Structure formats: structure tokens, C-alpha cells
Image (tube, rainbow, N blue to C red):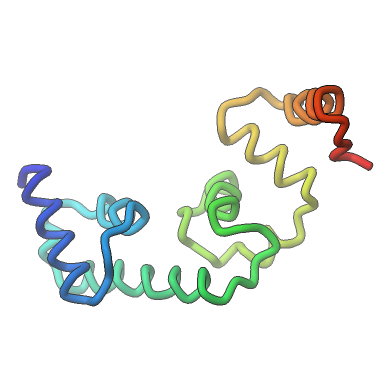
Length: 129
């Protein structure tokens, strides 16, 4: 299946289920192979994940915004949309979350403190009061 055919198929699935186009939904469907994309059970699994995701976004219970939670889930080896670890993540201090996100985005360990020092020096905002 070509990329264009996959795109049309995903858009049709989303439209048939009353969902608009979203980059996040595209990410979820990209995880499926061509064969899985035609498997109703696999598609329904993704639609369930989307429904749960929308519910979380409409009724946030996390300490951090959803885009941050997606990073923090992945740092811990989970799928970015797998909320089974969220209670543990919500126990993280802001310093731990910032450090994890820095490392996840390719910054060497310890750069979180350096970046905070730069912010303090440049903006006179102390992130570690």
C-alpha cells in the first residue's frame, strides 16, 4: 500500500468514526502494518486508544500536560499513549521530569542543571528555589 493509500484509508476510518484529522491519530495508525490496517479488531484497538486519549485530554488528571506525559512515558519504556504508568509519573518532581525530558531529547545527563542556570543568569528566574 502506498503512503497516499494509507493516508486515505486512515482519513476514512477517522471520518467514519466522527474523528477529525490529527497528527496524534496519524501516529497511532502508523504503528499498524498494511495488513493490520485492514483488520477491524486492530483498527478498533486504535480507536479505543484514541477515545481514551481524548477523554484524558478533556478531563486531565495528570500533574503534567499531556505532551509532557507522552515524553515521560517513553523515557520509562512505555508507549507514549500507555497511561498505565501515569500514577508513578505523577509522583515525579518537576526537576526529575525536566531531567528526563532533557535526556529523552538527546541532551547529556546534567544539562538540565546547566539549562536552569542559563535561565537564571539570562532571565533572572530561579527554577530551583
